[in-house]
Image 1 (tube, rainbow over the protein chains, first blue to last red):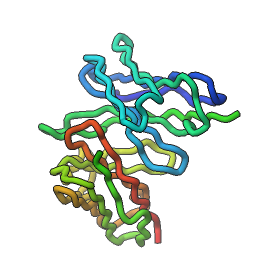
Image 2: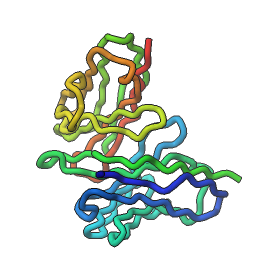
Image 3: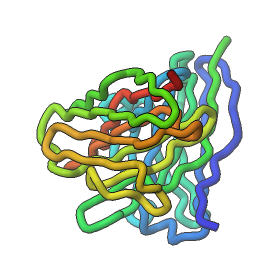
Length: 122
Length: 108
């Protein structure tokens, strides 16, 4: 089965570090970009950044540059999103998604993980 | 950076009626637009890419149109499973891959 499976919910305190994961299976993980998307409680979707497992190329949204780190371990088909010092405002659901080439020059998030809820409070 | 604006924020529709959702880009994105549906407690689901091409398995009741800066998603004969939040996303010269703020389609 083609799927992205994310790590479980996390409850952390402000200032703590965190790394969440997204593991792909059933397809060639290295040949698709992976995106991370934030959804704060009751709010919309925000694109955070993307990474290409096959070439370790990573790009960030200006809104998240310097706030998070995206990485990948191609050997275990897993992408990561990490924080070095969490804030209460990082409380949100985080999704990973696969970016597929749907047609020449057309791309979309065709496969999504189930989401990882991160709660930060003191 | 391209800004995507969706309207209305909330759309109240009676079952069986049609819903028309709008998405506007701050500059031309050609036809590089996707639409997603998100139900409560679920991850988003791809509906349309290329502004008007339905993704695999998406029923014909979902119809996308537009190009340049103005786009529309039309949902015909709304059923209970169609009440959800819908997002547009541009992917012209990505990254960035900007989402609109979403339109919630609720039961009238």
